[in-house]
Length: 140
Ligand code: HEC
Image (cartoon, rainbow, N blue to C red; front, side, top):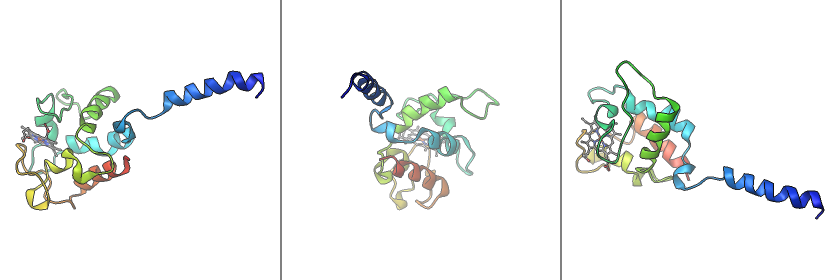
C-alpha cells in the first residue's frame, strides 16, 4: 500500500458508511412510497372516506401530515415525515405481517377484527392493496 492509498481508503470507507442504509425502514424505497403508495392515502376510493381524513395528525400509530384545504399533494418534507410513521407499521418483505395492510383489510380476506375506518380493502386483490404490498415486499 502506498501513501496515496493510505490517505484515500479511509475517506472512501467513511463515505460508504455515510450512504449505507440505516435501520430496516431505510430498506423501504422512499421514491416508490412517494409516487405510488402515498397517493392511495389521499385519493377518494368510494364508498370509503380517504385515509388522510382520519389519519392526519391522528393519535393512533398511522399518522399523516395535515393538508391545508385545496392542497392536493405533500411536500417532500411532509412525505418524509409520513414515511417515518408509515414504515413503523410495515415489516419489510412481509405484507401479511404488516399492520398497514392487515388492519384496514376485510376480515374474510385475512384482515383484523376491527378498523375504526372501515374495511377499506375488500380483498388482497384490490389494486391499491397490491400496490402497497408490492412496495413492502421489495423492501428487504
Ligand atoms: C373514518 C376514519 C378512518 C379512515 C377513513 C381510515 N382510518 Fe385507519 N383508523 C381510524 C381510527 C379511528 C383508528 C384507530 C382505532 C382502530 O385501530 O381502529 C385507525 C387505525 C388504523 C391503523 C392502525 C394504527 C395503529 O395505531 O396501529 C391502520 C394501519 C390504519 N388505520 C390504516 C388505514 C388506511 C390504510 C386507511 C385508508 C385506506 C385508513 N386507515 C382509513 C380511522 C380511519
